[in-house]
Image (cartoon, rainbow, N blue to C red):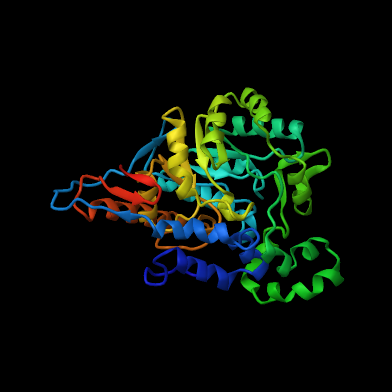
Amino acid sequence: MGRLTSHHVVNIADLRRLAKRRLPRVVFDYIDGGADAEVTLRENCRVFDTVTFRPRCAVATAACDLRTTVLGTTLEMPLLLGPVGSTRMFYPRGESAAACAAGQAGTVYTLSTLSGSAMEDVSAASKGPVWFQLYLVGGHDVARVGIERARKAGFSALVVTIDTPVAGMRERDVRDGTKELLTRNPWKMLPFIPQFLARPRWLAGFLGDGGLMTFPNVLLSDGPMKYADVGTALEQSMTSWQDLRWIRDAWKGPIVVKGVHTGDDARRAIDEGAAAIVVSNHGGRQLDGVAPTLRVLPEVVAAVNGQAEVLMDGGIRRGSDIAKALCLGARAVLIGPPHGSRAHAQAARVRLHGGPGSFLHRYPHGLARSVAAPHTTCTCQVSCPSSRSRST
């Protein structure tokens, strides 16, 4: 895909359509899909439509300063790139490309444990802050090695995901033949091969990048964890509150707990030493039927009561969505699966007037319009069902 002009891509939906045209069905559905009936997946996005602005007009507006601080680090915008597993499957060395884009944009890149690129390479690719997201796949000893590698590589925060006791039931993956393709049995794979042959440019890049990736940040006794083993490994490696204690001692730096849905869990995370909390339902990819993150954000903010920083992800598609999240108490947002992961992975693929970093600026432009268009001094009020209006 060549350089794209602005009229080809103006929003996330446009990027989604381009990705669907470029990627094999099984790859696209992995990044685009959710658990079971995908109710939570849809609600994460739809809930933003139920939140409305209450602008104050006829007020002179100076230039909006969108900078913020997260864990003591100044960022150019209240938007971070959240962890997206298997990014290298979407684009060769996609993690490094996305980290570079985040650094150019002046924000955080978060590397997933289940990435296809070594953490040292990804850290070196970014000029900005990088965080490492931790799963306990492979066991505690393997995790300790990963924690120490992340510390030495310059990662400034550790993101501990707590909402994946088992892998979600993603029905699209079943229909697309994910299980059969990972068997490496030609007869079982055969019915699902045509989807790859229909995307020759992706296939050439995939094979040129080494084919099916392993996980170099999960070093087992026989080498990096194989891709086919990840489902079983996740089911054997759930993270408990007790685990946070030894993780904190091993890391000796700020801990971000990701996957908080309730005020009770938020208070427990603080008790266990969390410096920040990410209100997240894993993009609707783990447990279907849970509330959308924007709806539970005010409950978590109230429970935290200023004792930790509150971030959120899920359903962020426009700069105005960021404004709504900030008005309801979030310090910043992460883009991650499903919609953010489209943007996140495609930020490494789509060249928009000078490279992937240019794409990331669409979010802050939309945020600035949301707070400046009513001619306010970067102040907006939001009314949301079951919550009071707030200003930011």
